[in-house]
Length: 220
Image 1 (cartoon, rainbow, N blue to C red):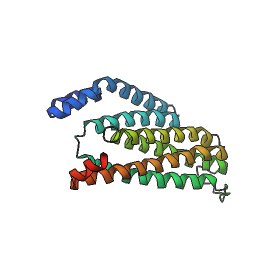
Image 2: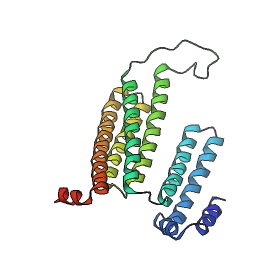
Image 3: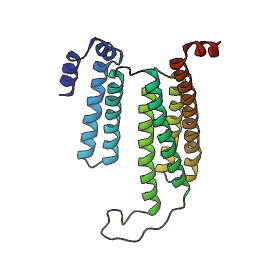
Image 4: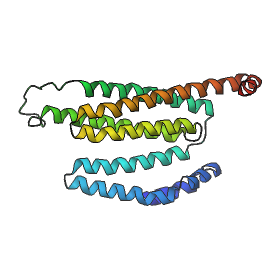
């Protein structure tokens, strides 16, 4: 069904979007998306929720990358400002996760009706932080794809933040919170750098828009 929908979508695209469709290799990616969705669905039916969610998240990432690739340009300045707002939000959320990772585990009151009643408090903390860290990685990837054309250097910086987030995840999963702190802080540092890079690019784009001659002089 998804392949048919993508094929029908192509027929409805503008010439500009059809070119973007080809560049994004939508037809080639559709098979991988379907496979991820099927494997994820089978895992969930077996009760393997985390594995199923992982595969479904992969499919969602590819679908989102296709959507971003097909979106026509809306002006460099607009895209840069949107990207900076998203990076600043990511930075704040990453720093919140960092702070919660450093907090000592607090015992929870026993509630026999809770589904987590038999779980160790450290396991609960690990699961919560891992879910938040994985979401941040997903959101960072989305922003990176958004700025690839408008700001290649920023895209590379965000990619480094993604890698650090990935390094933190197995440490959180293994309840090694102290070992997760360094990659988490590195991720924050990379996001801060990306925000600063975007700020400079926005300043330059605004100057070019308001005073092209001054922009040329500054570039010399």
